[in-house]
Image (cartoon, rainbow, N blue to C red):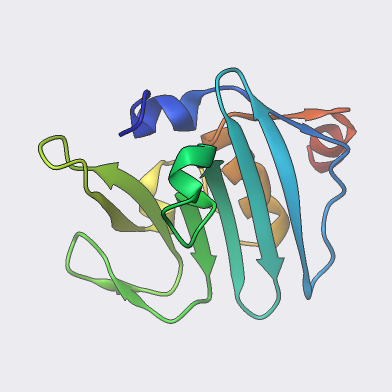
Amino acid sequence: MYEQSVEEMIQEEKTLFNFKFPKVNSKGRYELTGEKNKYIFDFQLGETGVIVISKALPEIKQKYQLRLTTPIVRVDLNAPPHMCNDGQMWKNHIHVLQIDKRTGREEYKTYKLEMYSPPLFADLNGRNVITDFFKLCNIKLIPSTFVQEII
């Protein structure tokens, strides 16, 4: 189904041009250029926050599905709690795409955000979560002034 594993898609270097840090109660969408794939970066920041990176589906597959992208990694902040893989319910969590190797079926594993990839996501304010999301998903900013401004 996919030429790359999910881990390879997450680790693939992606470039995001002219990113401006979003204000509270805003949402946006940016196209990312990867070495092998095209991706979409979506965010919505407010009382709850959602940050998503998706892979654009090939045109042939888009004809037969209602969606144009497949979410790969999604972060939810202050969201309704979900049952995570550890059996616990968490408001701040991350969904990661998993592909069943036998059937090719897509499913999402859910983890407590702060426990997924330490030391990332230790500070859950919106700005730090987006910065850590960029690190996790190997997103490089051009120009890189945004990252320097945060550090």
